Length: 332
Image (cartoon, rainbow, N blue to C red; front, side, top):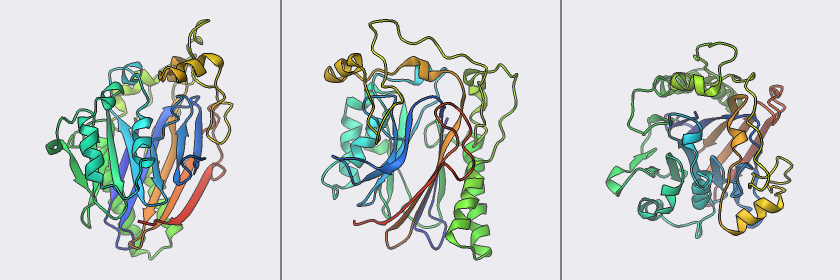
């Protein structure tokens, strides 16, 4: 149950986006990096559990940005579609030409049947220093598209529900805490690193109740709407058995530079256009696995910071050892 908080309220930054990626911790994931050919201008992490290796958040050298949240379903399995939602993010970040208007892409997305083949989602997309669209695969026309970051002084949150749903405590609390972090940074006349630390503090806000030690992520589902940060849960849950002989499975975590080492069965699935997800990745230890802070200045200077909290064996990564930071000038 991820959260995205977007603000234009800081006088020194035209755009701030912060994100918690909450996930089953054994799901193989590549940390943020510049992607290999044929998409070397895309910066973001990658989900290695699907053949499409989609991302949940990324930005390009030209200043295209996208971040996605899924919809809360009754179970984690129900939230999984036939294809990867991350492919939707990829479709914007890798799309050419880089000068295409956001509205053109959104219009195509609303009309496309492709988006109906994935689980429910909301996608924030656009260019830095321009209004950002929030498009959903449950939007049927352009009148249902919301736009944010088009003026100064806005702070908006988005989680695993529709954008205009104001009933989730974590969204309201997140917006409040981002406002406080920005005000505190301005008043203290701090440097950029201190702003990142304050925003990470927002992402670390934990109000999740403690259930029985045997509780799984499924048991916690009703409470995820309350807490910005999700601590490690479900450690006593055993993963489901691997796929039976002859069934296609997802690529293993033995990946290199964002490319999975797929089995012959997976290669066959790739050839036929399927995007099978090994269901064993949807069980076991769960929590906030990655945190991202993106800061954009008025001149297009981008700072992209990612913190990894757990490795793929669900072991905690010491604070700072899983940090990656990139800076570049958006060319658009």
